[in-house]
Every structure is written in structure tokens, then in C-alpha cells.
Figure 1: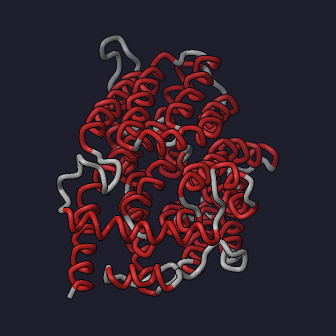
Figure 2: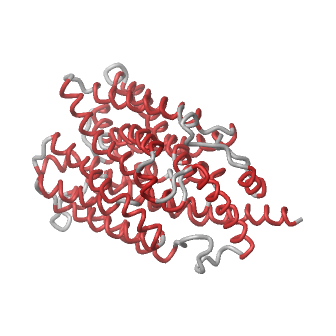
Figure 3: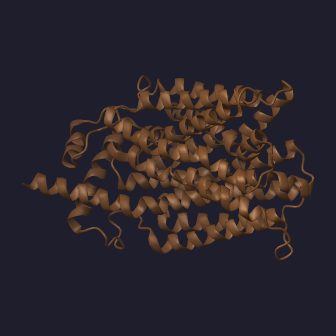
Amino acid sequence: MQQQVEQLALKSAISKATKRLLPFLALMYVMAYLDRANIGFAQQAFQADTGLSNAAYAFGAGIFFIGYAIFEVPSNILLFRVGARMWLSRIMVTWGLISAAMMLAHTETVFYILRFLLGASEAGFMPGVMLYLTFWFPINIRAKVAGYFWFGPPIAFILGGPLSGVLLSFHDVMGLHNWQLMFMVEGLAAVVVGVWAFFYLDNRPSDARCTWLTDTEKGSLIAAITAEESEKLNHGPRGAWAALADPKVIYLCLIAFTIQIGSYGIAFFMPSQIAALIGTKVGFLVGVLSGIPWLVAAFAAYYVPHLSTILNERRVVSAVTLCVGGLGVGLSGYLINVSPFVAFIALCIGCAGLLAVQPIYWTFPTGYLGGTAAASGIALINSLGNLGGFVAPNIRVWAEVTFASDKAGLFLLGLVGFAGGLMILAVFALGIARRPSSAAQKQQVAGGYSDPAQ
């Protein structure tokens, strides 16, 4: 009888936490992704007004990730120490203000500085959320739960694309260029959500502010998470510095790097690529069409993690998903001059694969790392992985110039993504993912969930 009560309490706690936290976290990610990638929508108007070259644009778009990488680990350690509520709110308010300040980027130097500061201010957000999910959800359902959070990027493009397109259609509003108005509006929107986050989020199930769970629900959820954390200490690194030097963590960094090269190699050039396919300038129509690949990606981000749960398999599902994403990106380049429509379909497949793999991929580091090792290790993985965002636009431009072909950049991005998929196949052999012990399995059974990790 007692086990049945615990089982029902854990199910109820997880259901309530999913409904309360995930929609808001997804909203926060929408704002984050929109403010880091809206430069892609402003590219044509921004370069026309400022005279920036393609190389300068690519460098400025990518330097965001240098600032991001430098401050990622200390930011996540601070989140672990001071609490997610205050720190995630601080991150959002800061990046919103700096994103709005992009309206002042009239020169290359100012553009580089603001993009660097934007990355520095946002550092710790995504790994902070991944760490935050370990406080609330056992690993056996974390891929499925994280899939809801990963709705953020596609929603940012589905809704943000038309929004950016509309804002770019206005000229001389309050004496501002269209791209200035876009940066100001979207940056200040992030500030509003950041202030809201401070009053909405709770740090952990044990938080006294968490009145939306009963004491029984809190106890069952805390017990499940505590059992899981004990398991991690048996095979993962202990302490922040140990995680940073762990070869398995470095291997996970390399996989994340390949994923982000593909993701941002598409994101920063999506509007201009679609504009080239249909033979027009970036505006409302391109904004709408730019949302379609991300709509497909949103469905994939929901259904692929669910498929992983049904099949009781993470490794193969995530590897195949990433390989398919890489092939889609590469084929979208090959088919540009063959059939714009089919090239567009390939682009949709590429976006879907590169996004849907991420909620499953992140179960590997969050299942391997615990405590302060999780705070530093997850941050290191995300920071080094996100250097792919710096590398992607630059190697894409390099490949196009070197091989004198607008297809070469997409070929290279696709090849990198495919290589990342092959690397995922080795995570079990390297001991990064293991089956839970009997103690952890009992907690999972008590919660009424099977383990999709293996």
C-alpha cells in the first residue's frame, strides 16, 4: 500500500512540475534563441546600412559564442550556489538589455563588442536549465521532458520569423532604421520575461516557495532525485574540477560541438538562404517561410524523444537522428540548383534532425554527472559545444569562398553533423551511460516509469 501511495505521489509531482515549469522554460528559451539568432533576419538591412562585409558579419555573428564559452562554467556554478530562480532571471534581464543595445551597432567594432557581451550575458542559460531539470525530473523521463523545453528554438523562428519580418517592414519609426526597431522590441521583451521569471520559478522541490506540490509529492520526488544522485557518485567524477578534466566529459563536448556547428550554420543563414531560393529579399514572406523548417523541427523535438522512450533506447535513436539531420543539411546544398522545393524539404529534414537529437543527447551528460560536477561539467559541454556557433558561420563562408560554390558550406556542415552521429554510438562503450542499479530501478518502478536510457 505504501509503495502504491509513493507511486501515485511521484506521478502526480512529475505531472505538476511538467505543466508548471516546462511551458515557462520554453518561453525563456524562445526569447534566448530569438535574441541570439535575430541577427540572421536583420542581415541584409543591417549590412546595407552599416556597410559590413560578409566576413565581418560572419565573425560578429559567431563571436557571441566566445563570450558565451568564457563565462559558461562560472555562471553555472553560481546558479548551483545561489539558485536557479535568481540566476536565470539575472541572465534574461542582462541579455535583453544588451540585445536591445544592438540598435547602436553602426560600426564593426561596436557590433563585435555587443555580440561578445550578448554571449557573455547569456552564458549559463541553457546548461543552467539542463541542470535545473535534474533537480525536478528523474533521468528515465528527462529526454521526453527536455523535448518540451526544446520547443523554444522552433517557436522562436515560427513566431519570431514573421515578427522580425513585420518589424523589418517599418522604416523611420521614432527615427530608427527597421533593424534597430527589431533589436529594441525583441530585446525589451526578454527583459519583461526575465523579471517575470524571478517571481515565477522555484529552485527545487524542497523550496518553501513551492506551494503547488503537497508534502507527500515533494517527499516522493526528492527521494527519487536523491537516489539518482547517489548513483552518479558511484561512476561519475566528484567535484567541479574533476568534471572539467574528465576525458568522457571532453568526448561529450566534441559531440555537442558537431551538433551546434550544424544548428547555427543553418540558423544564422536561414532567412537569406530561403530568400535566395524564392528570389526575393528578407521580409514578411521570408519570415513566414523560415518558420516552416522549425515547425517541422518542433514536431520532431516532441516525437523523437517519445520514440526513444517507447523503444527504450537513447543511443541508436539519437545517432540516427543526428546523421539524418546532417544528410538533410548537405542535400539542401546539393539540391539548390536542381529543385528549390526539394532543397527546402531537405532543409526541413536537416533542421528537424539537428534539433530533435538535443533533448536525447543531453540525457548523457545529465545522467553521468551529479552535484557540483554536474554544474561545471554541463556548462563546459555547452560552452565548448557552442563554440560551434562561432565556427559554423566562419567555416561556411570559408568553404563557399575556397571552393567558389554556395553549396560547399552546406556540404561541410552536413558532414560534421553526420560525424557527430557516429560519435554518439560510442557513448556506452566509453562508460558514459550505464544501467541504473537496483536502488535506482526501485525508484523508477515506484514512479511507474520505465527507463528509456538504455
